[in-house]
Length: 111
Image (tube, rainbow, N blue to C red):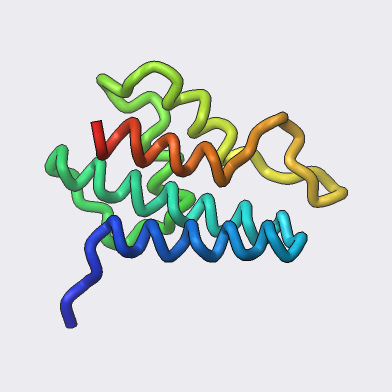
């Protein structure tokens, strides 16, 4: 079976994130944004010759932290995307993970 390209997979996750947010389910929107960021990380590393077939989206995003030659701001966004929610299921940083996943894709893969 042929695997869908990164753009199709990313767009699918972002559509689910947008739908979840519109339905008031911010937790699900964050999960979708993190999966989308994992797709971006996978493609970015693949372009650099690094294969990550057995890693989760979260692990791929964490692996990108501190990666040599990343554009400015990427490490900050990775930090937001890998921050765990607090006991109230709220993100303890002021960040829009859905918007940041889109920014990450544009910055790393479409520039």
